[in-house]
Image 1 (cartoon, rainbow, N blue to C red):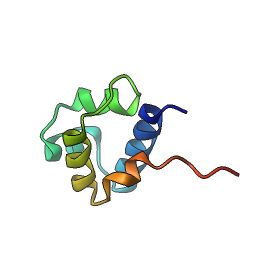
Image 2 (image 1 turned 90 degrees about the vertical axis):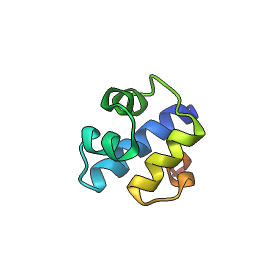
Image 3 (image 1 turned 90 degrees about the horizontal axis):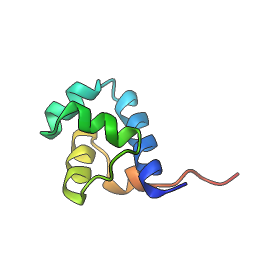
Length: 72
């Protein structure tokens, strides 16, 4: 799994766990909602600055968004 995919899956899971819509997450992070959607679908790769803002809004460490799932 590419890191872009890992990031997108983790972003979606963490956003949903916080009960945030894409629109609310985007607003709080100062980015466009369509960009959040594209990140979650692995269409775009986030810059380190955007990734950090998203992590801050989600109240997690940036590394959590990049963590690959544990192998069985």
